[in-house]
Length: 113
Figure 1 (tube, rainbow, N blue to C red):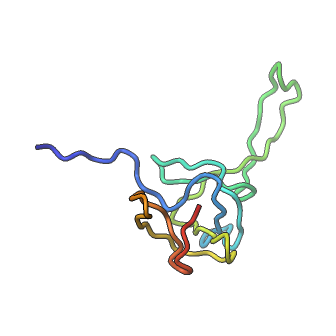
Figure 2: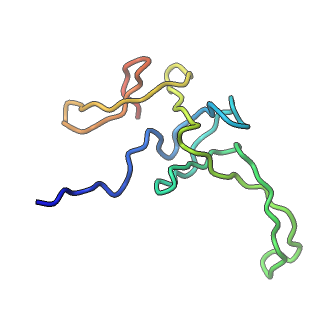
């Protein structure tokens, strides 16, 4: 019998989570996760790791010019911020009463929504 492999990796961060950058050039900044790129294990955080892109003039934008956007950061450089305390916390998984796996804060023990 062949083993089934899970195609999607389990990450400790999801969309709309509040995270804190724990290493790199943007260390200490916090923001909301806009998008998680599971294949690359990276996340785009609102207002963090801003880059400048050059845009060519087009029919929609005849001026062209410079555009500031967020670039992706690696998941290992991010830490989830606990909504109840407002501090970064490690996460774990445990089953609730319904038998579903839920994320919980290892600092407070509360389930993360």
